[in-house]
Picture 1 (cartoon, rainbow, N blue to C red):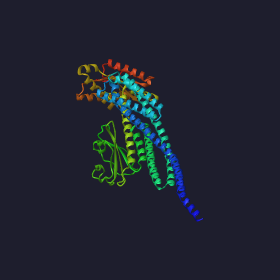
Picture 2 (tube, rainbow, N blue to C red; picture 1 turned 120 degrees about the vertical axis):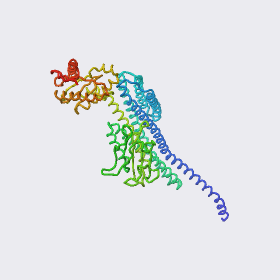
Picture 3 (cartoon, rainbow, N blue to C red; picture 1 turned 90 degrees about the vertical axis):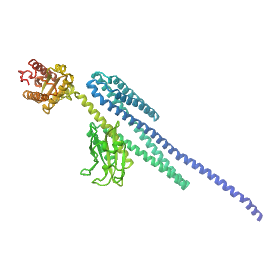
Picture 4 (cartoon, helix red, strand yellow; picture 1 turned 45 degrees about the vertical axis):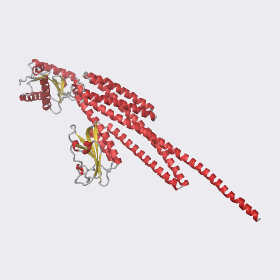
Length: 567
C-alpha cells in the first residue's frame, strides 16, 4: 500500500504541472481571444471616429479654400468698383499696371476654383463642384467680355459690360455661399459621427481597463483624454465656423457702415463677453481713427485707446495681432500705460484689405487675466470679416456716387435728376423747372481754351449749389446746359431764386480767375404739363426766347418774358 501510494504520489506529481500548463494555456487562449475581440470591438469605432475626423480635416481644407476664394472675389469687386465709375463717366483707359493687378486677381480666382473642385470631389460633393465650376465659367466670361472695354470704349458699352460682370460676380458669390453651407452641413455630420464613434470606443476601452489591469486603465485613460481633447477641439472649431458663418450672413445684410458696426458690436459682445472691446476705423483719408463702437456698459466712463492715427498704432504698423499680458511691461503699448482706470491686459487686432489699413479692434481685460487664444481667434474672425464688409460697402457707395453724379461738376447727372423728379410726381408735389444754358460757351472755349470752359462749368456749379433753396436740386443736363428743379415753388419765387443765382455768379466772376460769362434761363411750371419731359420742353422753348431776346436773362414759359437788365 505504501508503494502504491508512493507510486501514485510519484506518478501524480508530474501531472499537476501539465494540468496547470493546459489551464494556463487555455486561459491564455481565452484571454487572447477576449483581448482580440475586445480590441476589435473598441478599435473599430475608434478607427471609424478617426476616419470621420480625417474627413473633417478634408472638409475644413475645402472650407478654408472657399473662404480664400471669397476674399479674392471681394478684392476683385473692390478693384473693379474703384475704376468703373470713372470709366462710365469719361470712357477713360485704366492704367496697364492696374489692369495687371485685376488680371492677377482673376488668375488667382481660376486657380482657387480648380483647387476647390478637387477638394469637393475628395469629400464627395461632385455636384456642388460642378455647380461652382459652371458659375465660375459664367463669371469668367463676363470678366472676359469686360476686358476689352477697360482699354477704352463708349459709356454705354462699359455700363452694359459692368452690369453683366456684377451679375456674374453676384452669382459666383452666391455659389460660394451655397458651397460653404453644404460643407458646413457635411462637416457637422462628420463631427457628430466621429464624436459618437469616439464615445463608443472610449466606453469599451474603459471596460477593458477594468478587466485587464491598471496598466490598460492608464493607457485607455490617456488615449481617452487625447480623444476627448481632440473632440473638444473639433467642437470649438465647429463653434468658430458657426460663428463666422452667422457673422458673415449678418454682415451681408448690413447695407451701410453704421449697420455693420451694430452687427460687430453684437458679435463681439456674444463671443468675448469678458473683454471690453472697441473698434477704431480710419476715415477716407486713412489719416485719423474714429471710434465706431464699444462694448463697455452704459455709464462706463473708462477711457478707451487714445491712438489717433493708423501710423501711431503698433498693431496697424506691424500688420499683425499684438498681445500685451500687462500694461506694466516695458514692451507694452504706450497707449496702455498710466491709464486712469489702472493696469490692464490687452490685445490689438489690425483690420486691413489689400494691404491698406482700415482700422483696429482693441480689447482690454484684467491684468491677471490676459485675453485667451480662443478670445483672440474670435476677435480676428470678427476683424477680418469686418474689414471685407467695410471695404465692400465703401466701394459700392463710391460706385453709386460716381454713377449718380457728373464727374466734372459734382452735380447730379441727367438720369439721377429724372429719378428724383419721378419721386416728386409719385408724391403729387408740384415744381418749377429752370432750364439754363451758358451764353456763347463755344466762343469761350475757342477763345480761352477748353480748360477755361471747364473752369466756367465748375464755377457755375458751385455758385448754383450755394444759391438755391435747401430742397431745390441742380443737375448738369449735358454740355453747358443745366436744369434746376424747385419743388413746391411759385413762379415768382422761382424767378427770385434764379435771379439770386445770376447775381451771385456775376459777383464770383469779379475775382478774374475765370473768364467772364453769363447764363440764360427758361422757366416752366409742372402745373401746366402732364410729364416732366413736357415741362422741360416748355422751359427749353422759354430758354430759346431768352436767347433771341439778347441772352443773360430769365424768361417764363406761357407768360410775358421777364426782362432782366444785363449785368
